[in-house]
Image (cartoon, rainbow, N blue to C red; front, side, top):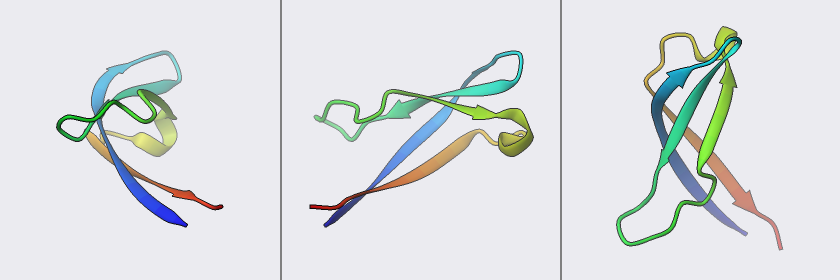
Length: 56
């Protein structure tokens, strides 16, 4: 099993959600790219971290 923390920063708001763009590690391709989070959860948050765990 391996865990990765992916960081996202605020990009823009849509009707019901907030769009975040991944900040990839230097020299690596993005893992997820774009993330949409519902406004009721995101609030005014400018940065999000998502932990992904691969299970073999």
